[in-house]
Length: 356
Image 1 (tube, helix red, strand yellow):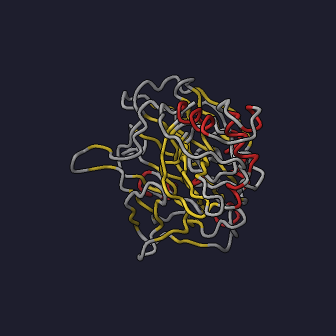
Image 2 (image 1 turned 135 degrees about the horizontal axis):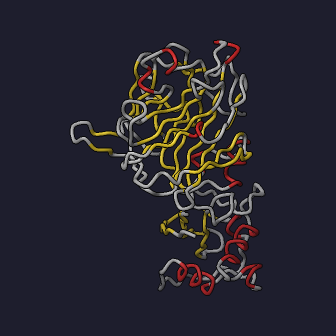
Image 3 (image 1 turned 60 degrees about the vertical axis):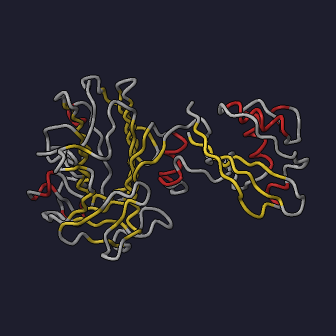
């Protein structure tokens, strides 16, 4: 988890205030968003952009961005990517250096990873029992390494995650467990791929659908081609692209917590919020003394948890020591509420990383 410690100037009190800005989920969560396509942020050519990782994007054909027809995935979602059965239009993310024959992004190795997205399986629109094709960065479709995600072309609506490693091992979730996605409705989907426990877990609309074993995977997971979004296998045949909607596709390092998955599925948390920080530590919609006290108590510092309502140099020393830092001695602030009332501008930002 990343924590940014802001040193803020309080205009009225003249003191120096310290505030740790965190997410509105538990501060022990360690997933960090790597790449995120919101389908709303586009360049001058109308190509959806990776708003977090800034991968270079291009398109093949004319993939459509819409906000009607299926409505929106959640309140305020905006546009989604519309794909069409038998079509080949797709987005392409530049993650593979063909000249140097090596991957340059989405190199997961044997680390825990997760991803999430919204999709709409338009059975009413195409009467085809094969559901959405989400992404693919396995060269040749089934040979590794890398992975692709789609609904199976053999089993109606059955989600299929194809994982391949550099050792030549391949796992297809449909061969292990059946995860059947609802049709004609927006569905939030999340995957946690836990390499440490050799399990992958699937969530629909914030609820776990179960796990499947990935013990067979022994090697690194890396891309073997640029990532195609909205098709699999380059859209080379009719089954490689289906009539569907896709929104808020995101990849993360680490595993998403249940709290995060619930928030993403409710539309109250965006992928860009995972690993970024807004100060509402307790998730009550306000940034106030309660957030500061919760933070301090997590470090056995002052505030409510430490039995000392004053945020002073002892508290700061406790925070800094936790991150292996020391030596910064600010003027104490007798009233933590001044953080909410009198902060005028951030003057120094120190970035620390703490992983639990």
